[in-house]
Image (tube, rainbow, N blue to C red; front, side):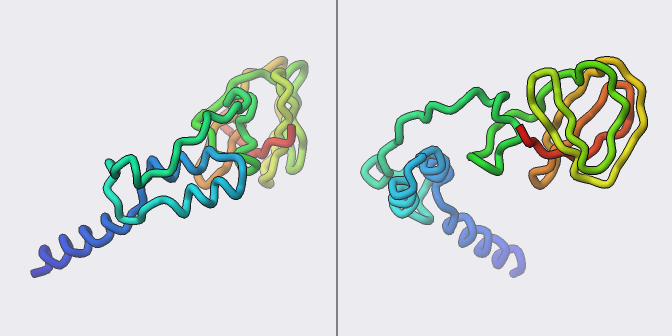
Length: 154
């Protein structure tokens, strides 16, 4: 009896999902009114292979900047699929403290947003900014085992 109930619940939950491809298509539309119309046209509970007549017209591909240049600015635009970027910190790097800005060789500026701190003495260290859970970003510095949480300023 429990198995039957679980199967019925699973079937009901699956049928309530919207078309993922349709949502992705709408998410790419820049104009707010057109994007809303696209979302309104999505049939909830429709199978992924819905007839072409039921789908909203596909928008033109947006002319977005390269993903690596926009890494860290996801809060300002749609989420990008880049998992990490690599660069260096030019010159002498003496560590960090809370709210400190760190400029990378690629021109990006990241601010330490946690309460961590470290004293280091490094020349041109290699760094990697990686995506963490729940929209967080972490600055990994080669030769250390500590990674401050950061957010991108520039």
